[in-house]
Image (cartoon, rainbow, N blue to C red; front, side):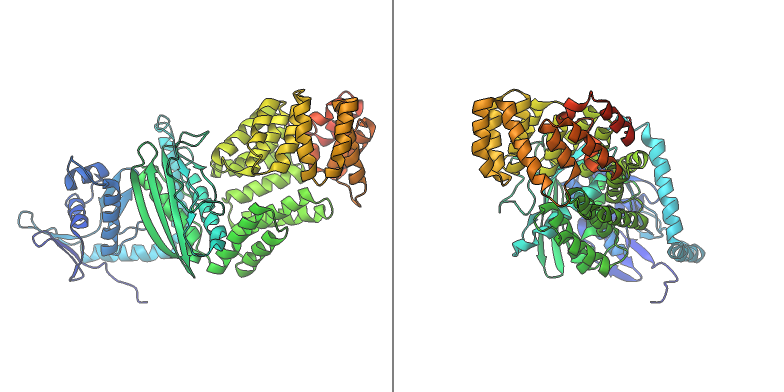
Length: 617
């Protein structure tokens, strides 16, 4: 395509109420034309959104003026063939308003004509455009540094500003095929990620409501109220309707107090462009709420096949139903696009999970997890999920405390609204012995994703390690419907610590069949009635010990727990010391786990702690 030597001549004819571009009239509706006239008359000066409202609509406003301004600005840019990311005519001043800065001639019976910019000036602009194309990367770096400098300078003045919180309701799947839930859930997660990185000091997000895969076929925002744990001022909801390679995404931002619509719009995109669209939506929301958008690059567009495979992998990871399904989809994404960082981060999380769950082959799984996490970080150094993955690996396998802490904090810095980042940092704090702050981090993770089963389960365990059994019981009860096997098991343990033995036994009787041990129940109940609670729990521990010992490669942490619960401290300590050599991940909680209280006075326990070399916080 030949390069344009000059910018097209623009004429704003106020006598005929027309915009003329390159000698041809441009169709522009009444309100956008009025807004353009106001901006051009004030050319070079900032025109605030408030001034636009007062001039165009007056004081007695009966329309959604914010949406009206946004629509008018968008139509003006379309008429001028201008772009918000590299404007030649219309500049957005984030959180303030707009400035018209391009060359234009005004024709008005009452105002002398404003001459066009000289041909020399126009040629200089054209050369500037060409240089910007050639030096885009360098200019982008300078721009981001400038944004950071402005943010630092404004930090002191913005301390008193209210931090806004948006409750993001998972998008609804309006496609005919319910199998598209994975696609819709993935877009919701991407909106949460992009919003969380806009300006962490000024804007936070929480996930509020069930995912598309469990939503009812009805609006979920009615009667939302405020989500627990966060005082959200706004809610964001929407829907996705997909047909083949095209997707229509509709978004609505509203105030929580009166459900008034702040902004609403629909976008038609190819499937491969949907992830980058989420960044555009996030930035539009930032503009609407007058929150300065900091310098985080938008995800680059990818092919529909790559996005499909990646989102499907995330969906399978969250379901835990087909062990290898997530890996297959993530690998498909990397095979299709070897530079797609999110898929490598997904593989890192997959292999890290496998290394923790399966003792057999765990060392190879750890190696693969670190390889893929490092690759994701090399492709995108500011990708929060990659930092979170590295933090997990450095903590749980390498026992590199400093690196684990740095990457966990970096993930939090990049996206403080990420529940996973809070959970990773909580795990580090627990390892360092700071159980109180670990509980606080897990509580923040749950506040950001109140319906997340994994987050609530981790909080439940964190309460146990903090010896806060009452709260452990409360959170476990909240999981009875979502994860009954885990919930009944935790209730069995916590109620026992609270000396509520009958209630504990009742929960154990429910937990054992869910664990595949229904045949243990009669003997367990008989032992409880004949010899008491401790004897009954010891019986279960001995049964578990026999099962673990039958395995070709027993899990060392499970084995040590069973020995300790069965009243065999010597075997428990020997097993724990053996686990030091292989960096057994479970060892990281040995200082806080109540199961090991009976061995803490043993001199070998002190030696165990010395060999692990725990961090302090």
